[in-house]
Image 1 (cartoon, rainbow, N blue to C red):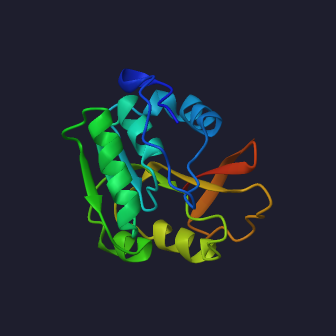
Image 2 (image 1 turned 90 degrees about the horizontal axis):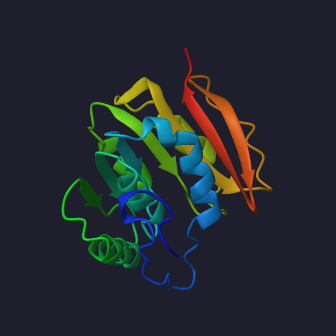
Length: 181
């Protein structure tokens, strides 16, 4: 796995252990092709950071601050290793807790992007979107991006969020949402 754009372009990230499903290069390329105009100096939040590939790609492309979380210490070791590979020394905070606890404790006053990539068999997507929709740091311009398996039907959008774009990439869907109103 490698970074595909920005100042860390071409850096090879650490091998992902079995059982962890990183977002593909193709998916990251599609994602950042869509958000590229808004990424500069943004605040990027990831409650399920996994390998850190998406978050580090955001930083590589100009995000100003990463706030990442995972409950797995193995994932967080991988994130730290990948940050070291890219020689990133600042601009990020790392948390280790359940994603819902992380979101409830998140006190960031202004969030530009929230990338949600829970395990495909997560099963609590509705609760996740409701929790995200209540974050005090959401702005009218905040993008909430949900990666799901292409088989999943997203038919439970909370009334305070609205989908403005859906993109299919390989076996995944990216749902782009914003606060409604």
